[in-house]
Length: 69
Image (cartoon, rainbow, N blue to C red; front, side, top):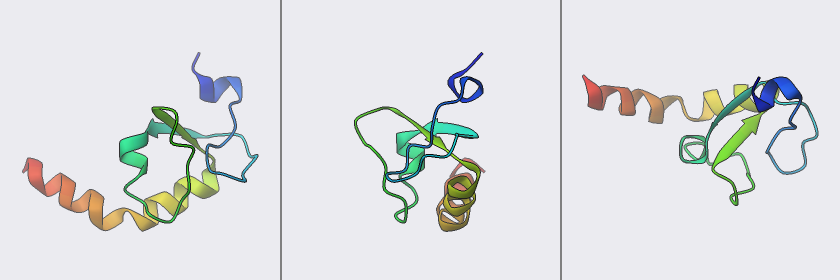
């Protein structure tokens, strides 16, 4: 059982929602729009902030995938 299933809260400053996803801090920092606590290696995101992260980092993720092809 991981931390998300245990009910950890979102890592975005000012958000108290329960997290739905977790990812590394390096990957999460692809989005310049979200403000994280940078003292930890893992970041936990609620559904709303994950959707925002996905939209704002779409081009970066596409170029990252192109490197592997």
